[in-house]
Image 1 (spheres, rainbow, N blue to C red):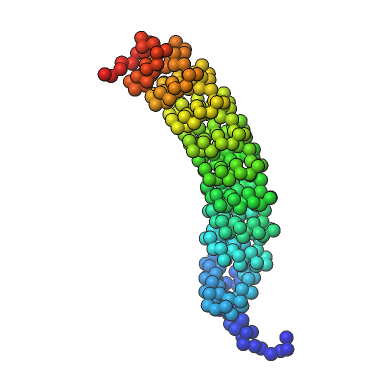
Image 2: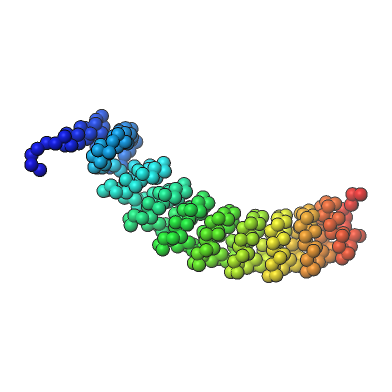
Length: 320
């Protein structure tokens, strides 16, 4: 200001020249790098990191040389989980953390980068609800429970988007920790889509998930004509069937005793034995269907232990 050139000024000029040495003119402007300019941009990125790491004075000076940075640098920092770089880039003028429909926070959610998600959520330009709350749905899909916790603490995020897709998907994929978090949010409805969460968990044999969902009074395990126990029995998911039988709302005799008929037809001997412990189950229905269609001796033996089953109806010999 007074016309005197200081050593700081000289250092600044030298560092600026060092940063831009060998860089093509077209990439010395603030613009997204292309395939033609990426190598030069990468070279300068490496120089920038080296100069910043040398000493505090150089770092403070070089931090002012941000006109060459692009939105792609922010995306690369997020992808590489460079927390300090993201923190620095968010303070740089001209960079947009909401670019490409809030791609940075979506990317951080996919990779489960908790600290970067925290940084991005603190920036008012970032919209975590973009594209129908896709960021939180990505975090749930990746089983990143700490990231999900951050999103749930942000009042802008709606965990019930798309008819509670978040908990429906998490339950279907066996994401126990995420489902536990979602159940703690009063906005989330685990009975959405006719109790799809417990129906899909039961169908896949996810007994811990079924147990967790049954702990919520809003969940109805008898939804859709007791689909949960019908599919669990048919597919041989013993622990799931055990849990469902313990719930008084579940009817194992539904659809003319379909659970035991399907279990017998598929040779699920242990399921047949378990179902027969329930007085509501009748293995003799439909003209002794169960014993007539039992494909193996173990299943047939389990059925014949019940006095209601007619051994003359069976056509499968019992091994001695």
